[in-house]
Structures are given as C-alpha cells and as structure tokens.
Length: 98
Image: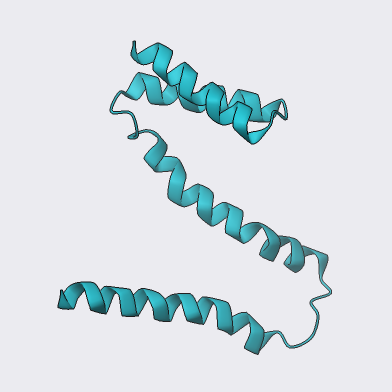
C-alpha cells in the first residue's frame, strides 16, 4: 500500500509540473509557428507512443492484431470516421482470429 501511495504521489507531482511549467515559463503568447505546432502535436504523439505497442498484444493473436491495425490504418488514411475505423479494425481482427 505504501508503494502505491508513493507512486500516485510521484505521478501527481510530475503531472502537475508538466501542466504548471509552461504557464510559468511562457507568460507571453508564443508567436513562433514551429513552436506552436510542436506544442499542439505533443499530446497526440505521446498518446500514440503509449497505446500503439499495446495494440499488438490486445488480442493474444499476433496475426489478428496486425490485421486489425492494418485495417484501421487503411480506413483512417481514407478519412473514415472514428466509429468506422474502430468497427473495421475489430471486424478484421475477429475475422482473422476465426
């Protein structure tokens, strides 16, 4: 229980620092287009880096995971909606696993 509480406290502190540090460092509006676009895409890059490796272990079947990922990438490339991409990935993974 002590390890859990210490872990939660450390994660809360780091999360607070990540959110509070930009406010204290950048008190003026950021005018650089490159920095603004870099800061805009950081949450998406972090989310992708955290979730993408887990995609290949989600089904327990590597071929089904690869098929689902490929279907999702193809559907997303053709600008389909989020629901269509998710359902397409699930259906393709299900078909391959059968």
